[in-house]
Image 1 (cartoon, rainbow, N blue to C red):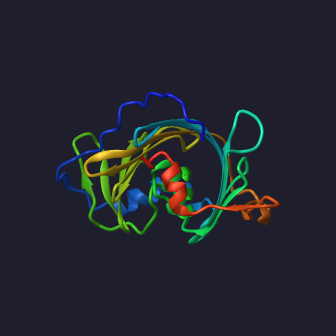
Image 2 (tube, rainbow, N blue to C red):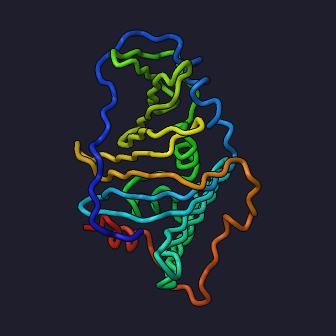
Length: 250
């Protein structure tokens, strides 16, 4: 990513309190995720702004994802080679820094993304988030309804928040551990703005806004999309080195 000064918008507020029982949550969740849960592949461009730690970030990432857990992320520079290229398949990721010929091989993808941007997300979670499903999982019958009209319920190890969009439900946000995702600017049944926040000790370790464009769903992707192109003379890079050099390194 290109690091510049950028002002993040006000953090979103999710409903709090016990709420009232909402036993219809599983069916509402099925309706809200009808489109995004069928996303097998997705390609898109993401304009990223916000901060990680004390570092303000802005840049563009071109991305491609394929179920169940493949990803390719390219940090696009204004000209020349990409800032970084990350390819991942399941629990193994390879990061290439083409401008420095540095290569980090076979590291956990969520830890690479955490070192780059402060949000520990692997390829499967990233795919469901940018598709509009939040943190995917089976819906439990523990739904709660809140005075603002939103409802929430458990999906695996996450909590998903839904809101009404006309006669239908849509995913408004989700939380899992220290991570919070919220959605805005829906068009054609999909969000075009995503807010990602990672908290640490009661404070935001990272707070990013992703504005999506050029989204293509369920197209056939060349298998080579998820293969790393290594430089002729790669210089090894460790995860610790990457973390120290990244926005949270201080």
